[in-house]
Amino acid sequence: MPTETVYGLAGPAADPLAVAAIFAAKGRPRFNPLISHVADLAAAERIAVFSADARRLAAAFWPGPLTLVLPSQTGSIVCELARAGLDTVAVRVPAHPTALALIRAFGGPVVAPSANRSGRPSPTSLAHAVDETGDRVAVALEGGPCRIGLESTVVSLLDRPRLLRPGAVTREEIEALIGPLAEAEADAKRSPGRMARHYAPNAPVRLGADAPRSGEAYLAFGPHPPGPGVWNLSPTGDLAEAAANLFGLLRAADLSCPVAIAVAPIPEVGLGEAIADRLKRSAGYVG
Ligand code: AMP
Ligand code: MG
Image (cartoon, protein in one colour):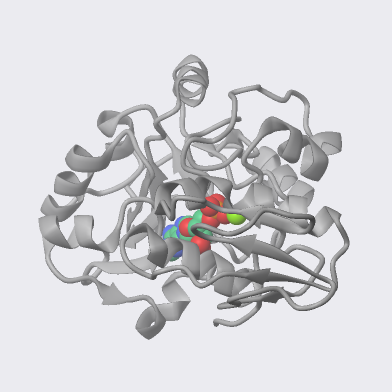
């Protein structure tokens, strides 16, 4: 299933056999819960308990790339396996016409973790999704290249608001509505998906590189002479363009079998925080 963030492996959130098949297709550890995708706020409220802050964020950013982690609603049909046994649930309304049409036609919450095998870069086109998990799915829906290209921002609203995963809805945009966000690290058990090495190509990744070394592929950012082994995330230094290109260019660079993929420095402001998060994990830097 295409979404505006990345392509997902979609299945009914209520069906433990379908959810188990998705975990198996990805090779995803079962302690890492899935996001339930719904068509609107009313559907979200059938599976999650909304606070005032949650309503404010949903009103501002849905449909869109923001996932809320909330207490699970009494009588929710989302199965335990999708929640990894937690008494909380992650929920989002995607902003992609094909995803919304599929969810509406199906009529219930849909889990849709990224359609890569666990630990690999997320697919941002149908071809990349089919390369990763195409042999394990019943149907593949074409929805064009993903507009955003990074996974959703994940905010937990359980005790105090926390940023569990930076994304295209930025920290600054969220804090403007609900005040300061606490760090995820202080509460790591509530975000079991924050693994140190993730989104990783086959080649090692070297960050903050002003230039490639011999044998390295280079992901440039901003003006840079083109040439063999050079891919530019955004020649104009545009963060949204770099985010949309990130996973596709990591894949392209990786296919050239370099000794390493060197990545230019990227400012860590706004959307740059999410890009830096994905890059550090692809390099295996953060826990
Ligand atoms: P993915 O489906 O690969 O985009 O990952 C979903 C992200 O949301 C992972 O980082 C999960 O750990 C996180 N997540 C999903 N459900 C919960 C939950 N109930 N509590 C905390 N984090 C969650
Ligand atoms: Mg993923």
